[in-house]
Length: 411
Image 1: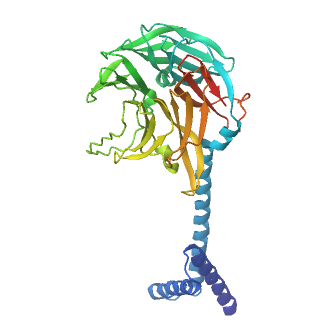
Image 2: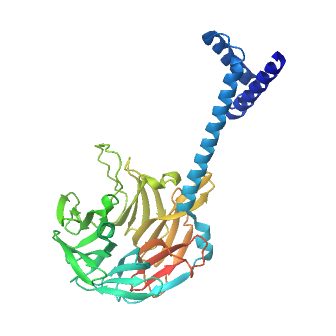
Image 3: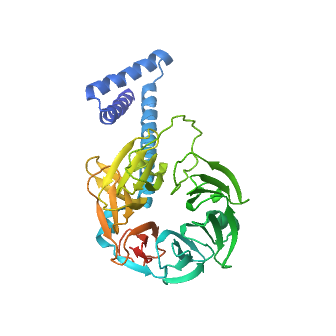
């Protein structure tokens, strides 16, 4: 019996030695010393119990195995989450092509948005022709037209608030006529209007929290307004800009960390036409706590929110950059030994360019717009329901609005 116990004790100790040697990267001799120290320590503190060190060894090995399995499944879960939300750019570049075109607008398409309702995938668009239009993606048909604005339409968004709370399919639009208007798609009418800005209203954005109850707007009157969509009240007016506010973004709710640093970044050489906020969801591949901007100086720049410093500058466009986006794509970055987020930009030079967020080298891929487009003013990534007419394996499609009116989908 004593011989069996000794052999079992030796076996357990050998397993522990192997684990410590491989996992903690200690030499076998050092691992053996660690094991013996544990056993001596237990003898001194707890007194001698027959085979106690064997029981402890078995317990420790059980704990190690369970912990290792939990850690392994946790890594697999992280990989699965990332794999379902990120797509390799190579797949899109190698197989995507122009698959749909929507004709109707006769001037600049300044803004587009995508949504699904009544089992129908739709695009809404706003244009310099003063109209807001709704399109059925599958049939290529225009299914609604709103012409209540008296001047250019700068931005359109599907209202997440009205859908989540009332199951109403509503579009919100901002215009040079100084108003923000809400349109019911089913009833084909305007039912809500915000009057408060004293000049044209450019960018609008629904809050990513509270089911989109709050709306932020930037205006040519140099102010930013925060609105309560439910009550139609203006909650706060932010003053401080010295010129037109072209676009706005709202970050997700985060910790109430009061940071009194007045971070100002002044590196663009011309006026800034667009900015995008990089949420914490992009943190794995380098996009968290960042702001992406495009300018009339033809550059795209990435900024660190915490320090206010410029991280990267991307040069390649020949004319003004009107739209920037954090894409759902990733690319293998050899320099860092892993994946990087891919950002995207559209320009008056009639191209859409893709960039590695962690490298300011030449663009990864370029989509050239149709010669009739005469410039890319807005874009949006989305997934078709069945992707029947798309050729790329990842299922991601890119929709963009052009200077001359056509709206096109690549996929």
